[in-house]
Image (cartoon, rainbow, N blue to C red; front, side, top):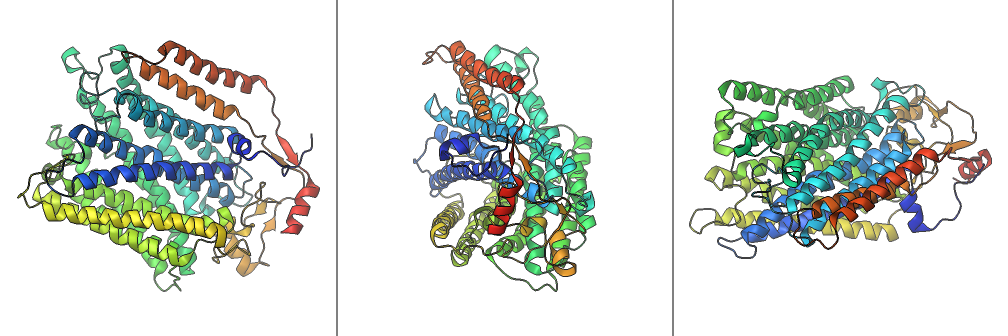
Length: 621
């Protein structure tokens, strides 16, 4: 049946049922931002507790819960969905596709992630949040020592991780199978390359995490003995399982930021990315070595000098491909006609900040030195220089760069520059002094400290920095609201004079992305057509009816069922659950499998946007 894609719809129903990769990207952006702000509030509370010695703002238990939830949310529920937001919106546009390979699974991945995060967050109201640290080391996370909140940790991350795994598989298939004619692998933009490699890392890293969480769940809920030492279990086994996931996870988060920087720097330097081929192979090498360094998180466990030495060498070796990328970005900027927009400020400042985080990473990669640093604030400073100084700056660069493509208007540059400087200065004020705290000997994860130990001034300075970072986030929110009403509307699809395919189509992007599938003739295809062609992309297909997937409520129902299924399992150990757990579990199972059965037996061939509608829309633009 021929239908138009532009019929009036109920707004709420439209967003609940959408399978459009662009709308799902915005859902990821909203969900990730909400979790990011939640984790930020937790960070502020912890810094207020440490602002002065012997504070009593928070108890030790509450501090442990905030510490655990802050790290867990930032790692799994804030940065990851923000990265997936850009992947969802930009990757299909950069490869010339009209959607991802599996639109239904794309929606399912988002809703599973969202309900997994919601399940984890409910722990605050149902017995207390998890309190064993975001790494959930056994035996602190076992039934004997861990609070009931650890059940929410285990089940919430299992649900949320399933959504991430689904999305990773989807992007692998999309990039390999759905490229436009002429878009060879060595013409892929760097952001698409990093998305492909990260998606492969997700498949290989999230599976051991899922296995480890299943083992911990069996220990906690069903009396298994994987991590029970007195029953023959091994607590170090959890550390191996977690860090086999945990260190590739660092690259799962930072490689897309590398990809964003590799798009922003050439666009605002007015130059082609220096050393494209070496950049691609550097990404591949980082991904390969990323699975060979996990034991550097365990140098103090007592594995032995030979194993420590091997993993120390592999940890230092991974700095080589990272260094290649740093120099390539610098050479791209060298001699370029640089425009220091907010996006370029974030991208260029990413380079020295990430280098500093990398240098401290090489320091802690030396096993003897790590014995001194390991349980101190030096390590806290190191990984925040990677996560915030690296990943978050990359995400801000991507936000300001692609915002007009996503929403049809520019963010205010004056407010953007205020946001950047508040964030950049506040970040360094907060975390640079934590290196000094670590060298002095302040332990990690302590909720208070004594007066007269030389820690007062640096902790006070660090807390002051968090106020500047908070102000930066407030300015960003004001900018988004102000720009929605007063922002400069984009008159063309390419406000930056950019190079890649997404800028060849209108902003915001029509539902069908491309009226005609583009013919790619070179690396940086949009720039090539502007210089060597007539300023428009050559078409590989005529204008014709465009097939689009049909919206569906089933992904929402499946994810909602998994939420109830997980909630019921967390209720099993409770002394007085508010409902019989097996009723809640049964409801979740029925919802999940019922929706799966409906999806299996109901034929859905999608719908078509008629050729006449497409032509009318394009003429109107």
